[in-house]
Image (cartoon, rainbow, N blue to C red):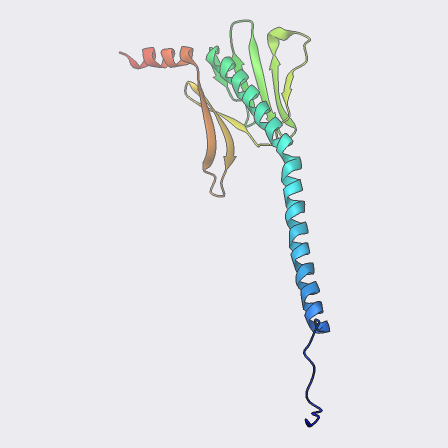
Length: 165
């Protein structure tokens, strides 16, 4: 006959309650991480069409500005947010760069409404000789980070003839 042992237990056939609580806790943490990843992905997906529209608007804006500068006889910047291009004796184009977007008003268009581009990027025009420089942003030190240069061939030709003796 075998002696009975009080400490002798039968083999465990299930999970302990503590083990189940640890597993449930780990699953909860994993679900929280997945929910955050899903929320971030949905924000990116919903913002993509707006970014694409902004890119298309900027492309149309720079195409029109390039045409205007190319045909201009004079370039004036009366203030930091305005660009006036004289295309001929009877036609001038005024570009206004503001917080609500960018407007283009053509003096020859008469009563036609000005073209408007609703862009969120802060843009500022500058004149650099025969060029219009469109500055897209500035860093903390005031240095230009992004810029596009548009040339006026008429003003470039004038500058070359003035340099020659």
